Each structure stands twice: as structure tokens, then as C-alpha cells.
Length: 111
Image 1 (cartoon, rainbow, N blue to C red):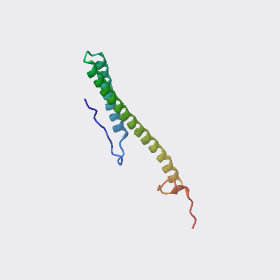
Image 2: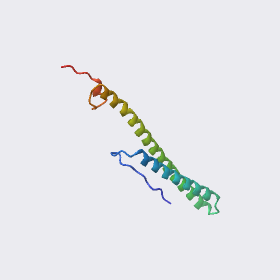
Image 3: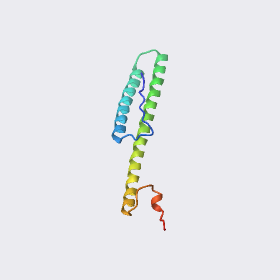
Image 4: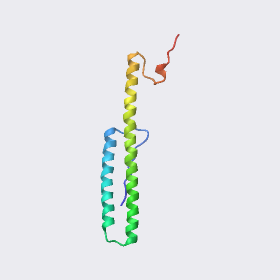
């Protein structure tokens, strides 16, 4: 039993639909692991083996939950950064200024 690692490069932006599909896959894994944990609890295997299997499955569940949480945070940050950039660019375009940076657009220069 192994948990497949899903990673994204920090330099490249991951599309929202890609993140959503990764979350869906991880949620499927989470359901499978939860079912295996229930099956293990109800099995008649040796007590020591049952404890080891239960601990392993619980650790895998925690890892998958952490991956889901990280992807959800990434998705949230992508949505908020995309939402923040559009109004700033629209305001700069309306003022006739090029879109260089949020701080540069707030400085008036006189010659």
C-alpha cells in the first residue's frame, strides 16, 4: 500500500482545473484508505498485525489529507491573486498608465 505523491513545480502556475482534478483523485484515495481502515478494524487478523496495519493506514490518510489541504490552499491563492491583479490592471489602464507594478502606479512624477 502506497500513497502516490502529487506535486507541482513552484515556479509554474498550475491551472485551477488541474488542481481540482488532483484534489478529486486524492479524495478517491482517501475513500479507499478509509474503507481499508474499516475492513482492517473488522478483520480477524492477528492483533499485532492489525495494530501495525491500522497505524500505517492512519498515516497514509493523514498524508493524503495534508496533500488535499495544500492543493486547496494553492487553489485559493490562485483565485485570490487572479482576482487582485485584474482590478489593479483595469485601474491603471483607465488612468492611461502602463501596468508595471502596483506600487509604481501609485506614484506621480513631475518633470
